[in-house]
Image 1 (cartoon, helix red, strand yellow):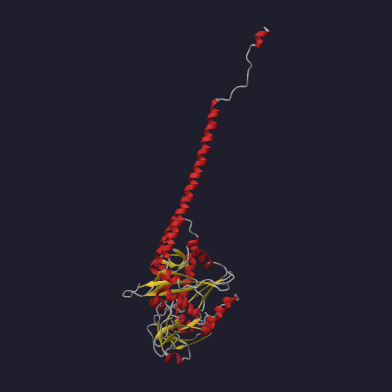
Image 2 (image 1 turned 90 degrees about the vertical axis):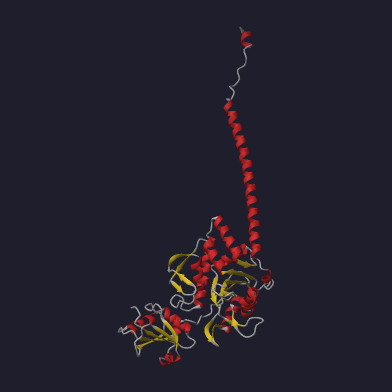
Length: 430
């Protein structure tokens, strides 16, 4: 009995069921697939990145203009770094085939990199253009010698080095805005400019390409842009900041590629896309000054010019170079300095007094009121010979006159000892 028991086999622990082995193999295979799949995905991403880099560099090469790059200044230590931005109209007016720089802005960064400024130069600024006799409007430099001559002219006018340039074609400008899906802005007053176009008023208005172009070009609507070119450059700066904000919010890669396509086809520059993006960030920064070359509009020899105040301009540039800041006073259109006379030619009793009180409330220091010698059908704004900018400011503050007549008359303004004389007509709504 004992031997029989000893011959009985020893019982071992029960073996694991086969499904456990299969599960282990399954997870090993799955981990292998995940590893190789991740590796393939990484290779694909790297390939896509390389393709994107090559594609972007190809677009950048298409924007280069070697002739312009040759006249730019090299960046030197202790000097501000300056980029000239030009918005160019290439014969949009029927019958014209010349190019005109309608937007001229300098984006300059102080030597320590802490401060930056946008200095707008009105396109009608009276300057001497290198290689030409006498005086011309600064925007004519582009017609005479393209962006190269614009660089040289701006450098001579400001005394600042011009290290980089960006030239935007107006036709392409519309394409860029449309590629972004429009640009959202707050428009205080609707613009109806017979030359530039229409822009609707409202909060958060999304401007399409045509409306955006109308905004940055409008200067003939006396109610919406009463100071003409000066208001125009303000609108240009506001729009570019709004457009850069729109660009910075882009998250759709396909839309971003569409924007890059539009930019590369319509912009000439020596900058890379990355440097343009960095420049755009500066235009949105907190330490940004928005300046306009100080001066006043004036007719010289029958030609309309913007006459720069050289002393004030040099002071502004000197203060910026030294880092002390300082914003120049812009004398044109200052309500407190405009003496106005308001005459009632409408036949409505008390209207002159009502309009005069309104103008006084807006900051006009001296407003005289009275009655016109005869009745007027249309409200007319008379101004002294070189005071059209002041007349535009006053006309913009007359809500009851939709399309006032602006007329130069030294005899009338002298008789009332005023810079601007308003005669209220029967068309004035009150």
